[in-house]
Image (cartoon, rainbow, N blue to C red):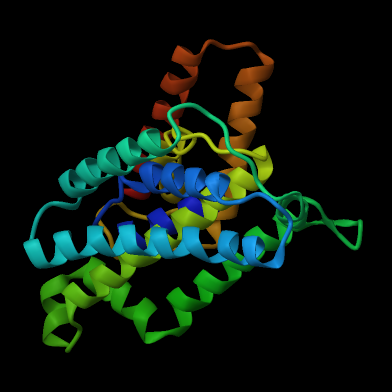
Length: 263
């Protein structure tokens, strides 16, 4: 899920923005995925596959519309909407619970041909797809152009508002996929499951070489960034380091990555 959240954050950061609502979107779509009927029927599985992504896309588009049309700072807007999505999640599911179809859970978290882990294929697919979108499409080139210099991009015929709305829509959609994966992995939902991904997604994007100023970065490095973060988590847990120091360590890693990418 961190790879998917990191891709979402990368798209937004490349435009010079930031998405602090990613945790709320992950939490809300996770709760929705876990409160849908869990019986293994074709209708229920289709509902699980389509409803959370539609919700995530809608939430992302709301962010984009407020930011692009209203001209408000992305930091404030996404901080506020993230709190709203979190509140809705807690209203739907005040405590962890719900259930997920066993067929869905096994399909998402099991093995393909009993050998290849399905999560590996899923994450590589997302990395490959969104790398192609960034590097091989006019949409991707527009994202880099806006992040580099929005005024010059506008003079080149690129409509910044439209691209930003689409980018935040993509972020919401990816956040939904991350929330769905977490529900399948946990066989249940948790309204607060997305909270760690707010900082972690930013850190992974920055470690991967994406500049917070926008216009520079990419997707491929997300794999390495997520691996570094996962390795750091494992080491700290194995050493029984308290949660306080774990947050300090993650913050220091982010600061170091920022210093490196800004030079």
